[in-house]
Every structure is written in C-alpha cells, then in structure tokens.
Length: 507
Image 1 (spheres, rainbow, N blue to C red):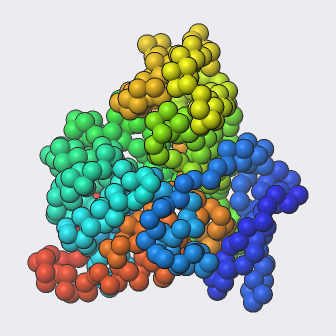
Image 2 (cartoon, helix red, strand yellow):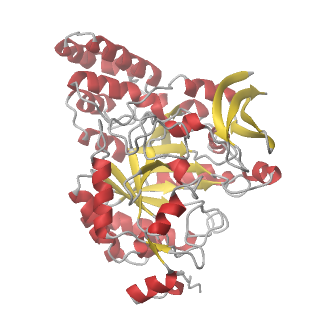
Image 3 (tube, rainbow, N blue to C red):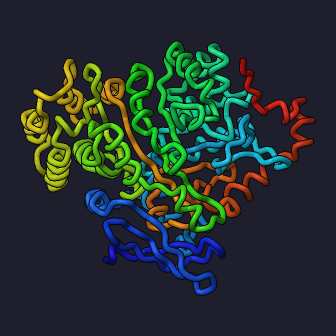
C-alpha cells in the first residue's frame, strides 16, 4: 500500500531521484530507482501501526526568517545553509570542537583518520558560530552541544564553554565518551562550573562485549558527574545483532542511577558509506524495531503504546505562543525522525507517563484552546479553564507518590516558569529515539524538517542528516579549509597526535 511520495538520493551516484514510501506486511519501506544504478528498497519503519500513530502529529514548522543562503533549495540537500525552504529552526546546534579522538570505533561516522588534517576552530571562530545561531529568527537557538571527535581533548574546553554561556545559550551539552572525565574529577567539576548542563555520554551496553569503547571507565565517569552535579543522558548506538538484546538492561541501569541520569537517547545505527544489502539487513534496526525489543525485554513495563513522536509537543508550543503572542521553541521535526516517552521512578518500578496521563487528550485540548485564543478568545478565561481542566487528564491514583504533574504543567503553561520543567526532568527518566538517516533510507522531506543542526565556521548551518551523510559536500570540504596538516598541528601545539590514543591499563 502506497503511503506517500518523496524524494531521495541514489546511494551510489547521489543523484536526486523520486522515491515512494509504502507499507507491506506491516513494515514501512522506501523504494527508489536510479536510471543508472537501479532500484534500492530499504526498511523505513518496522511497524506500520506505529507509523500511523506518529504521522498524526506531523506539523509544519516556522522555518528560518533570515536564511544563511539566498537560493530556494532546489538542489536540497546539496546546497544547504540553511535556506528558506527549511521548515524547522535550530532546536539543538552541534558545534564541533575537534575531529581528534582518543578512540577509533568502527561504527563512528566522525573521527580523524590517520594522516587527515586536524580541524580545531579558534575561540573567535566559536564565538562567531555561536552568534550566528543566536541570531536565528524568529527563534534564536538556545541549546548547543559541544561535540567532536572527543571534545575533552581540547585544552581550552573550559574557555569554549564559557563563550557559549556568554553568548546566551541556556542549555549546553558536552558530547563525550567520558574517559577523561572518568579519570579526572576536577575536570568534571570545572566543566560544570564553566556552564555545562548535561553530559551526552556514549554508552552502548552494560557489558564489555556490547560497550567496548568505555565499559571500564564509564561507571567512574558517572560517579564523577554525580559528585560534580552534572546531569547525564546516555547515548547508545543501537546495532542489530550487537547490542539490541541489552536495551531493557540499559533502561534498568539508567533507572538505578536516576539521581544523575536524566535520560537515554537511543540512536539506531546510521549505515553510511557503500554497504551491500545483506550487511545492511544484518545491522539495520529502526525506531519501532528497537521499541518492540524494549517492550519484550521489560516485560511490558515500557510498551510501544507509551511512545509518541517528537512533534507531538507542538500543541504545547501553540498554546504558549497564543498566550504570549510571541514565537516559541518549536520541535517541528519530521514525525519519523524520533519517538520518546517519560518514565517515573516509583519504588523499584518505572511508570511511563502514559499510564497516568491522557496524553492524546491533553495535547488535543491545548491545540483546541490555542486556536480559540488566536481567534480572540479571552486569555483570562483560557487560564481559568485550564486551571479547572488540567487535572482531568491526570489519574492521581496512578501518579507516582510525591509528584504533582498538574502543578508543574500549570507553572510551565501559564506562568512560563521553565524551572518547573527542570523539576519534571529531575523526577523523570527520558527514554527517546533519534534515527539519523543514511544514503539508503534517505528522505529529503525529513531533512527539510531537521531541527538538529551543525554550525560551521563559514557561517552556514547544516542539518545533521546532510552534514554527516554527505560529508564531501559539507563536513569534509569546509573543515579542510579550517584545518592544519598533522605536522603543522604538532608543530603549533608541541604535542604528538599518537599521544591522543587512549591506552587502557588492565590488571
């Protein structure tokens, strides 16, 4: 059954070609035919029923009113910048600190290969990138992720964090394997003092076999973050046949450390490069496929019905915008890009928010009220009705003890007290999925709605699934202009690149 038409690229020649998304035997596929290289058929979503549920929340974003490039994006995704065709503002900006890394992981799409130039922007270049992001209209970017490579290899990391804070970013994430923080409590404390809110910590499994990169160090890193007061989001790259049997155990581990771990962002592996179909089938897992494994591995404690797509929160944005008459942070990501839920600790149990909140009903009510406000209905009356109505969506008999979700929602919606949302996150465990694309499952409608972007020193802002899937157009070419040869970098810094490589000492 055909679901929609879109455009994609040939994974061989990267020619832009028509594509069709269709359902067959409850699986959603994407099919495309290149005149030169033939047909490619790839899994898009592994459950049609979940796809239908997610698609109900599809929404158009506000786009960018001051695009960084002048053209209309006819050649999307190969002339990005952002252009006026893009439909989402930057909800989270990635800024690359270095392409150096102390590890070499076979499934990483971003690291400095032997002999490759070293990319490390200057402090002035960072400040300029931050200012471009903060100047985005109608909604300035307020969340940045400092990434790499391994960003803790930068000696001036603390200066970069401080500059991000000076330029007005409210939320600063540090994306790391945690090894240096595991071995240096003082560094963890300094990172927090400089302004980092959250550690985006690589964590692929609970055993050394599934998480060889940092299994022996990650527990010390978590403990040091606990001592330093840094919240953590675990980031597992999910690979079928490698670590997909441990998804439930990862959730259990996060729940056991909920005092410091705020969430898990599972990322089904992006199969970049040229790869035979059999190899892709061996490793390919999609969001619904991983969620169904969680349902099975947790014996239904976390179920597929608990998950909603990222743009579902659009009704909250609509309501607050209608109340304030000002544009607000808007997660208008494509519905197929991600899903998430929140679960609350109650004794030894995790209770998903859907078990005590009518999520669909609440979102529908807020959307309806937003439309009424836009038509001129009284804000005072809307506030009064919300005060009376909000608790009707919450089953207090099933709500975790000592937790008042109604009060938190009212503070956020009516008083715009976003510290209330902080209280929400301290008590909840976020369980989310973000599936980045690759040349085989590429959907240009998705990249047009991407809300996770990379800032580059040349002033452009690039969606994640253009920046990393087609590095020859963006990442590699621009970084080459701002890079040093290894010999130049060593001469300038007085260091040796070989000393970056982490050597684990085992007893």
